[in-house]
Amino acid sequence: MNAKSIGTTTRRLRGRKALIADGDAGLGREITLAYARAGADVAIGYRGDDPEEAEITAAIARAEGGIVALLPGDLTDTGVCADVVQRAVAQLGGLDTLVALDGPIRLNLTRALRRLSLGGIRIRSLAALPR
Image (cartoon, rainbow, N blue to C red; front, side, top):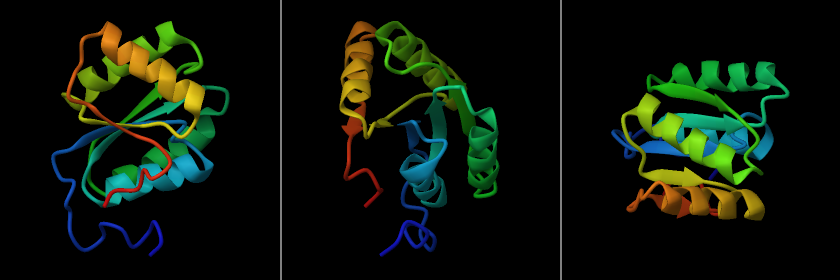
């Protein structure tokens, strides 16, 4: 099963809200698009040095019909992670899933969630495609 086929016939993630760290290009883009195709609203966290890639990913994800938020920031910085998480919550109207493939970024985002007292958010790593 490839990322394109996941969620295309059923919108099993409709109503879900996911923050995808480094979701603008490469594998992160594929994960972002898989979530969008499955019906989730997505926030794309990205470093900010290549906004064109993020805009392309956002345009494709928006074509799936959900909300897409672009959130530039250096996710290797814990303070920036907290800001990105807060912006994701504000722009999506909540957050229930966080996907981070990079270990240090996942750790920073986990710390940010604790600092912001946001429990109940599912943190996913390499097995991040929606099931």
